[in-house]
Length: 391
Image (cartoon, rainbow, N blue to C red; front, side):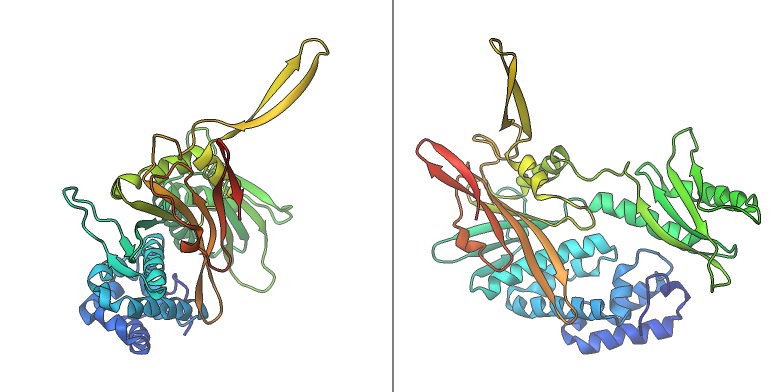
C-alpha cells in the first residue's frame, strides 16, 4: 500500500498498525528497536506532518523497502557491536533529516566493519565527557569519526514550513493550480495570514483573468512569500498546490557557512588521534568548489598594474581563511563529503569527495577511502611546497 506523508492523518490506527507490523515482520531485527508501545505512540502522532518514521514504516513504496533493506543490513553487520543499544533511540527519530543523519552514521560504521576493521560505537574519550560516533581500528590504525548532516537545523525549518503549507493549502475548493516560493524569514506563524491573503486574492480574480497571477505576501513591506496562480486544472474539480520551493533568498551554503558548521564538530573528536568528519548535505546543494573554498581558503584574484605599459596582469590565489590551517584543526585528517543514492531494490553509499588535510598531525593513506565513485583531493609534496591534486 503506497501512502504519502499527508495520507497518514486520514488513515485509521488499526490500518496503520497492520502496515507497520508488516514491515517489522519483513525485517525481524526491527523488533529490537520498535516495540508495540512505541508503534502505538508513533501512530497517535500521525497528525504531525513531519512524522517521517511512521511513513517509512507504513508505506510500501520501493524507496521505503530499499531504506529498510539497507538499514537492517547495517544493523546485522554491527550486531556484535551492541548496535541496538546505540541506535535504538536514534532510529526512533521522527524527523526526516535527523533520521537520515543517524542513518549516515550507521552506514559508515557498518561499511568499515564489513571491511574488517574493529568498530566501537560511541567510544568514550577519557576525561572529556565526549563520545564520537564511532572509532575504527586495526593493528596499524585507529581513526575516530563524526558523521552528521551539518545543515539539519536549517532543513528542519524548511521541512516544517513546507509540510505546514502542504497540509494547509495542498488541496483547495477553488479551481486553481498554484505554486509557492518562500524566503527563510517566513515562519510557521505566517501561514495563517498567508492563507487568508491567498483566498482573499482568489476571490478577486475575474472570469477572463489572464495567467499566471502573482500574489506577494509582505507583512512588513518585505516579500516573504510569492504565490503564483498558474491556471485552472482541466480534469479535476478542485485546486491544488503544484509545488513549493525556496526562493533565492534561501541562499545555498557558502564557504564561510560550511566552515562554521564543520568547526562545531571538531571538539567532539580527540586531539591526539586521526579524526575524520563525514558530512552529507541533505537537501542543500554544495558544490565541490564551495568545499574547496571552505577547507583550503576562498579563491581571490589580484590584479597588478605594470606602470610602464599600463597593462594589467591577474593572478589567482587562496586566502588564509580555510578550515585547514598549519596551526588550527590539525587533528582532522580528512573530511568526507558524502552523498547517498537509492536504487530500485537497494541503497548504496556514494562518496562524492574526500578532502585530505595537508597540515594533519596524522595523515591518512588514500587506501582507507578507496572505493567506487570516490575522488580524493590529496596533498602531493614537491620540494618545499605541497600541491593539492585530485586523484
